[in-house]
Image (cartoon, rainbow, N blue to C red; front, side):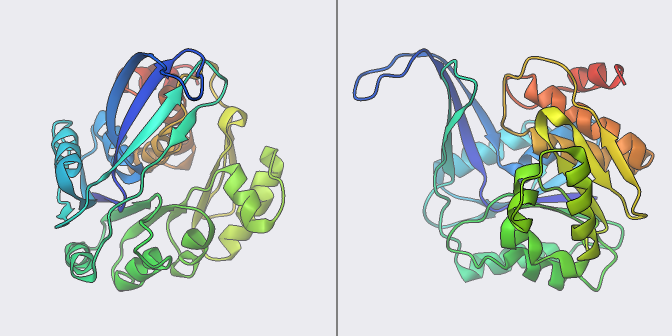
Length: 301
């Protein structure tokens, strides 16, 4: 079974409008609501690919109830820890006709120690052969080494771990040899204090992360495609698909889901193709990609 953990689930309110005038009333052209958070996004794309997963994490308040209901309606088994106070965050994604998207991301609720222990109890039930995906930011109430603590807790089992995070949250887990990490090229550059703007540089610094403990390092580079340094130090590259980018939310999560699914079915070469197709299909959609759009792109390879 594949388990995804989202510490900070969210309702994403994606709105479109014309030119924004500060200090005035601005009318929206339309708005859509999506239920997400990086781990949940991975589960949603896995479901599109026909692969079951269980979504773990924390929800709170009426927004948390809506997230759990919305995710469940997509055929995903949820086993969230319910917090007694606060509410799950609402993120506003503002698209105003500009090349870039403006995001207003809310703060997550405080997670007390007893509720964190509830999550640990759920993770203790994982078995050899399971896959655990840790993705995204964490609320300010938690220690920045929380991912490290989770990997340490399950280190006595043969569990594949996938970590999609940045900075110390990512670096702290490398000693536990995660099966896959997926920084983007900007996050990779920040780690090493440099600019990673070509596939060659991505491969160079991905190799350094592999030497620090990661089994596989997948670097997403938006319109420049993706680079994988696999467990055998073989370098794989994938070009980005051509299309009109409508959405920047969830493309990296979609790539992670596609890569995991591809590994389950075949191997690293196919995983790269499927992961890139999933990321591209989400970028070309208003929300997360549908299966038909993923396989349509995959047919172009």
